[in-house]
Length: 418
Image (cartoon, rainbow, N blue to C red):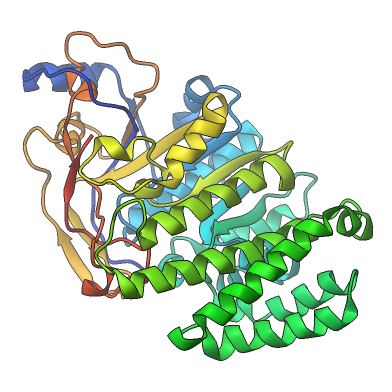
């Protein structure tokens, strides 16, 4: 499906609030003198990425780059990310793209998919199953014929692909069978039932949580044996992460059902973000310890200082920043105006940014697509807007059912301070 969107693309990095400055003319003048214009957000077959090479100096040798988006349903965001990923892979040595999608489904699709569309359908949430994203998966498949393939990974605790998760029972049986064949059959049978029937049945959640918690402990207790049984293979780590993720997923489901409006530290969203942070940590430290990793997620998940905004939920980004700060750079994508789609494909209008907001400053800079580096700035005349509380669009829906979004997803409702 092609997204219906005409949003102007704006790119900026995350920063924290400090001081106030009200001279908007100076803000625009400074930003016009200190931005990087993006010539195109669409990749072409002979793209030399000349307009993106500034990233080599901006990012340097950092090995984790988060690619955020203020809304999932914006076609330009998808196109821009696909082009950025190709550039980072071809010219900056990034060999892993990790999606805000299931850690198991993405791992299995990376290993078993036969084509780009097959990989896409086996792995990521359908919100990204679009004409703009498919070229990325075709590119991933094409790189398999090179000496530097781009690897697909995931870090979400949720199930993201109904097709992909169907392979999980057999996968878990194979890993567990290296230690205990009887328990392997029990695991495969239970996981099949959970995947196909009982995960949406609240009466089964307690039993299911206990089962996956036991499985998680089994993998941890037999870690060394499994590493020996699967030499040079991250399969045991992914199996353990799959069990861990299901425990968090069930807790998220239960909490969402009991307290659907809880957006605090104990809410369903916080449970999910904490689990995703742990999965990112395992990917970076254990599964791909020597590789550079790109992370595809919503701006809400990747931002560092959520407590400084109107939201109080701890985010994945806060944990990732605490653990990997010297190696981390985060890019947030923002739109100015146009239209986009909810997760249920319903089209909505993006009104022009309000005067004085971050998007308003960037939109008045000139280019339709541009980048501003926040990380390396010191406060000076004209850039005070970066160092103070400022409105920007986060597209965070406090009640996901209002727009048909899955649990933990986002839809446009509010503007938060930068």
